[in-house]
Length: 494
Image (cartoon, rainbow, N blue to C red; front, side, top):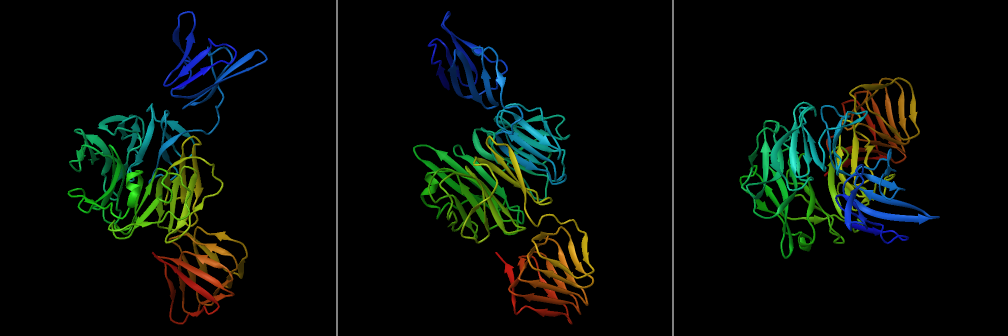
């Protein structure tokens, strides 16, 4: 609640909380004001100058002013990108479409060109778009969950209660099975649906205490799931638990995490897409040096990889297997680090603001960052742009500046000389055909399989580098020539 008294009139008193009120000195009552104001007041300020008084107030819908003692209000934030996002979901069938849950302003859908409101009011939160059916979506509304099977035309209640609007909501990697951290029969549990949201069942009995804050499922072995639950009593207690039989039994894997489990809750869990025992967790709170932990043995032991992170809460974590980088969302913006790196770097050109959620489109290579108050942001991650076509080289060509291709590269004639950094798509191939030469002259080639056919030549000169990611190969057929004594072939492994 906020209370503000005019500096020139002690009877001019304003009070705000969910709604806004003005003191009426003649009746000594509080009269409701601002029928056009948004709910949830955050601050009042009264400015008086030259006999004129202006009242300002900020709420969850924007920043308003009044020059007639609060009778009418003007929205000063129209046109500003200031939404408070709690959740973001990307469509896998329509890569440019995404769904966003916004604090106090419901759930909104972007079809790639424009936003539309999904007719769900209140606090929008965690949301999900079915990865096989773009018309099937889920969204939070305050403490309930709704679903649509016609792309948002009609939203139906599920009857599921989540106690908050930003609870975990994930999908099985290969099945039409949606998991939800919910409250059922007075217990905190995981519920699931296999019919697009019409009916739900419990995955486990659940706990009478301990809110489930984070949940993830292994893509390579969906029977393996991780959750984190936090109990609040005389002392905060966080536990991380794991199942390898889709919820029949659970194992506590909280050991080796230290005192942080009594100081903060896990805000998110990320499981490696090809290794169910490779998992990351991140913590909120302000325990210095206890932000991100990593396990390569299914939680039997944990390594603290917080390194140089500032003492601010970490809200989300995401691993990009394509380029072997880890992304985190913090209270001062997103950071990234290479797999097995030892230092985090802040992502540039981003506002100094709370970043709540991250999402990556594997198809478009766009990384989305949802913020609390500065809207939704996106950036393109190099290497995700493969379109399946070929770029053909027929004459001598030199790349003197950094270049990113979205195609296969095929040398049909002449020499291609790389003097800068050439970034290839993660699924692409460079083919050096007979009679052609690929020369990396002090430059670097990132990603891609490289095939040197019989009669083709590969030369690494002046410290030239070819860096292959885990799934890439350098193949030299019989009769090919490969000269790498003046350069280096690196394999980025995990």
